[in-house]
Length: 133
Image: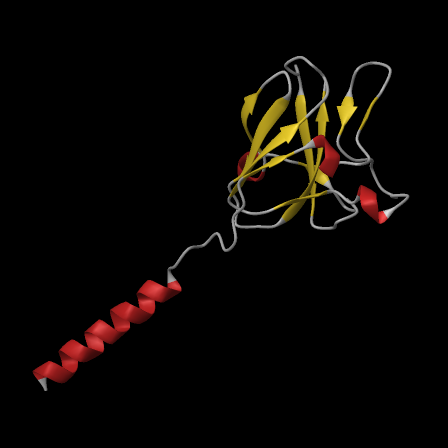
């Protein structure tokens, strides 16, 4: 009987261990070059946008997939360190029903004259639009 109880306890621990596995699923840490942002633009005031707001003209302008528990180094053409870094996140590829990124869903790690590093520490897939001033 004692051996059976021991085996049951070990089995239960094994089940709990697999249930508490990696909560992040499929994280992705990568560089996002400007070539992956075909609809990016800089306006006359020097504000750079990675993607337009909806409605989008073409699927090529879909917002950047921003996987959970991932860090993205995103290239920008400003040639200077941005003074403001604003992220919009959405559950929709085309940015519908977006909101300002905040908290763990939009963590600014670093800003440079050619890239910014953004992290999503949530275990949630978002789509991202980045605005730099």
